[in-house]
Image (cartoon, rainbow, N blue to C red; front, side, top):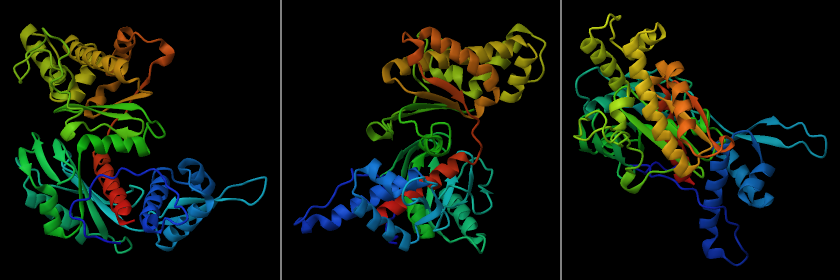
Length: 410
């Protein structure tokens, strides 16, 4: 496999194309495209048969059989099971060979990383970046080198690196154009790590990594149109998947919703306007509002030092915590209702650290959402909440890197 790529670029799999007799000049390129399509199909739909690949791609059985045999000989596909069929020959199922190679996944929001196999399962221990005020590029390189140095003997050495970044990134160059959390501005992260370690690098936004995790391994598996709303402690963002593709927007600026105005005459925001979604809905805003209400009203309440404390106080009936959580739920419900009317998703997933209070937030979000939507109830998407573990985005980054590496090698 070639490893000459410094920054692994985004891959949009081309439609499957059959070669035609006499089209010798383009045969090699068409074959590469078909190989990408078949490999991508198995990556995204494990345990599938050759016939199913034909049905989903439009390729002939002979083309699929030839390319599958090639991918098996290269070690990327295996046949782990046989379908029990009552008629004819029993077809075998194809799956990705998880141990064919490993990929490092780093999350610069949770400051954690590990090596993962091709099914996004960890194949090394997790290691953390230093807990300091500002993370430097050298710290990230040291983390990658630590993971490589301590790889288990039985695991293959990493072939690529995926890095999840909280902020705005340039997927083509691997630069972090802006990350408030990291205090980074126009930082050449991908190039620096590639030069330091010598492995190809994929840089993605934290939100895209989480969305991909839900699409491939979570609640949205098999769903082509869904919204993922991430309510973190320090911020809020949404990922939109339409017709099976993540909407990035021009210059990757889509889904930055912290300063989306929900209430024109609402609370003052740090940006200078009023009623921004982040002023109500992120975990930090919920905690701050509950603390402020207790102080201003001289209420007797338990100490509130975390969002978990707010959730526990609300369960015990403390007014300030209940009001802060309800305020966040109403704002989120208004945002999701507007987005649903515009896009018509099948599913809405609400995740992030704020979901520690999900049992209180989600019912009010649903009620507000239903009240404000003008569509009939049978056209409304299902709303579910998930609690994102600290390793979820790192696994998503590794998955992105492995897919790009494999598809670029075809």
